[in-house]
Length: 90
Image (cartoon, rainbow, N blue to C red):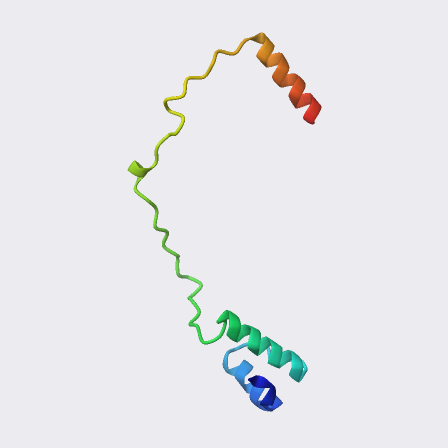
């Protein structure tokens, strides 16, 4: 689409949007086509001071999936095995 445009028209398009207009014609054409594919132009930029609002679920929706789990008792052998495994890994 932009390959038929003149360099002045391409650079004007970049300047109008506040983007860098430096480069060869082929580079400008490629950048404009990529911008169009990614919808990076013609979108209003959000102000830097705007704080995005997060929508979090209610705290009641969270639950502890391990709350009903009963852990087996640990003894000295478990401790030694754990320390051996950790020393092998590190």
